[in-house]
Image (tube, rainbow, N blue to C red; front, side, top):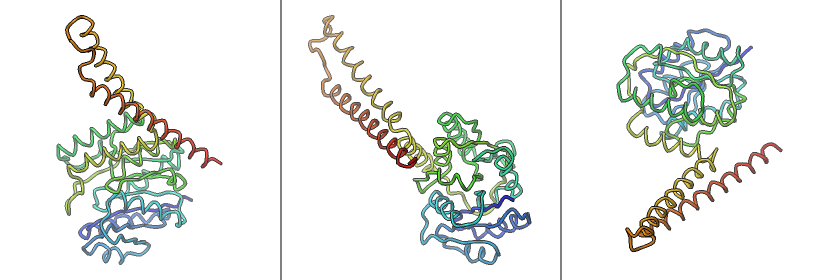
Length: 300
């Protein structure tokens, strides 16, 4: 029989955590063996309230480290817990606890490794326009980078086989969702997305802000460099070298036809583009070598 662990990262959720845990326990499903609460340095009564529930394991951070750090810690702790499936869900009660059992079905029945929820078709409120646009943009970006049919890249709920947790790389502390998707893709995991219900948050506030755009993009770039250094730095290097060649060719043509007195007018610019472009290619080659060496080491 499948053994499920529910992973709940939280920060200052005293107004929601009781209802969240009650909704899960009301399922009364024997497959759910443990609920692991990662408290990310709450300063309210979140931990005190959660500790009144049986079968809830609580791990506390001494300070607020970020959602990504909380999820990373939670996934790490599952290695010492006797389960084979992990479902991550938010503590703010925006998800329907019944979807916990639905989101594991593609894993148990269809042999998928990672399943993300999709709020698009069953959302129960009108999401603010900026958040909606941000979600659309990031979803399209992740679809482009992975080739997976991703409609919602940050649903807040996902399920994964415990054996595949080792494939996840969450370097950034602020957020986790794009990092999970990219590392799963490069690890060759089988991905599926299913519709889940999503309610309006009535208590508390979300951690999402304009900062999210910058940090998420930075984390995505870091993942691309980690997994595909040559492809990432190589494109930058080729672009800069091509730009240097184009500028120098145009200026040389101007000199040949008498439109300029100098063979090359912007010497420093050409040299700078050539040096940076060459260094980018070299960094990509060295990074790719390190990645391949690590792969060979892990396979032995």
